[in-house]
Length: 65
Image (cartoon, rainbow, N blue to C red; front, side):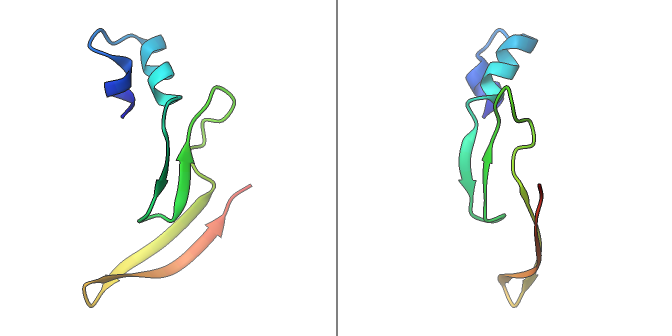
């Protein structure tokens, strides 16, 4: 995503600008993922899951500060 947004002539600044365009909901992790100049964390929830019987099973979910 960020590399595509940065364009064909990659620079550090272009990559950072591309990172700041990332903003989506990740269904697998069940968390909103976004980056900005003020926030480089990405998401604030960590989940641990396993595949059980062909489906994802949530083992643990922890919200970070």
